[in-house]
Length: 160
Image: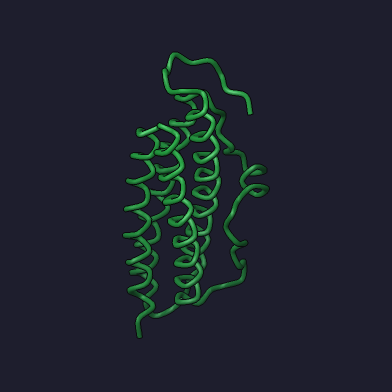
């Protein structure tokens, strides 16, 4: 991986670790945003309006999160893996089922993906902190809290 020159005084190893972690997070966040949008567009069921509205908020917030992650990447000399082709190639999330329409199926599928991303973000917090990039670890910590909150909201719908 080559980094662009920048006046940011973060060490070379910390930058490389953080760029790697941030690109994984970016790809998965973009993929998750698209999964949430797919559910928002296609879900059906008696709880449609509540979930439809909640998911619209989720994908808007995830889009803003992806922007923060990509900007941090650029700040430390990295290049974001933000194209559709790279997201499709590099995502660590399972493929989203295209033909799901039942609202609770969507909730389960999304809950699984939020949990997956939250786990990898927590691993990224540890890796970037250990490498000496407290700012990226802090960014990821905020994202971790947000993902956990959204996961809680989804799981609340799954209780019978």
